[in-house]
Image 1 (tube, helix red, strand yellow):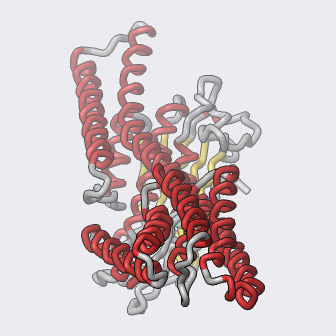
Image 2 (cartoon, rainbow, N blue to C red):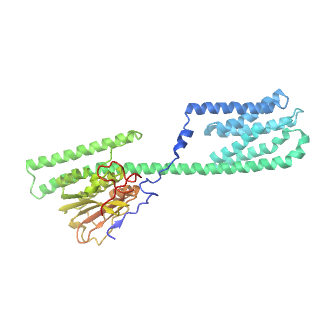
Image 3 (cartoon, rainbow, N blue to C red):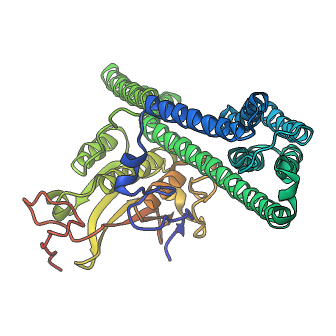
Length: 455
């Protein structure tokens, strides 16, 4: 195997970014309720449940007890709906109020005939669920334990004649319901932790994407500035200072590279400031010609070989952009590390069979400082070739970023010294299906595409 494969996890499925989540088409519309509608629905539900608790309290036949039952049922309901920072206080007040109302009910003659507070019981079970879900284990155990005590003694609100037939059955059922509520709370707690980890993974992926964009946008142009500046310094130190015309041309090239770097940085900052806005247009294969010509003007002679079948077809935007980035980063590395290179060859061709083709990109140079590296692979941690001379930086991220970009579209990147002399960067990017015929605007992977490739 030539070079070394840069180890980047490949996503499941071709052409899908890592961590991408898919949602059923109708789910977003089903739950996409405006905030005002949700508030109205919550208010209506609160009124109905509070009215149900008051109705159960009215079964006692005593107005003070009815009011007390309404309060003891309303507080656990409020604990389920309040903000997280107020949950502990409201939940503790609800549990305490439930126990106090049960105690007061056992001391008076007025007793309910048909209910012991079903709404309040359900609210206490929901308190257990939310406590286990939101709070640390000690505090969750205290709140859930208090709710379990309130659930156990709530049957004492019934007349004493009902204790014998109901307690042996209802109390175990309430304990079992509390156990189910605890299990539900633990499940929701695990879901919350998974969502938090997924969110952090998404943020990390976004940070890496922004880092790659900044590296690609700015590194290429800044490398050209550094190369032109070094050329002037080396020529002057060798006693052959450039003529005014040559110096003016070099400074013009530095000025152009600086302007392009500023434009790229400005475009990237615009995307960062407005992430929801339209993304910048992706690069096309036709842009490779201008890229190689610019490299030839500021460095070694660069030759481009581009398969006409790729230029005639409509490639997926992600594939075309990845090809452009592979070529740009490879040419940037040639400028930075292959100081003795005299020629660079860029070859972009179609490979593979007709049904499952792929784009093969190879960038080679004849830099003599790569010789004698003993086949040392590209530095997978730093991303820079480890055999490109003593002054080569080993802490860059260009090739690592290329491997990550290629993995997003199901491809791979290899880099290493060529047999004899020079360095090779090679990328293989699979296409999702056969290329459409010239003049057909359908994309690869479209079921209507019937065009085939000639072998």
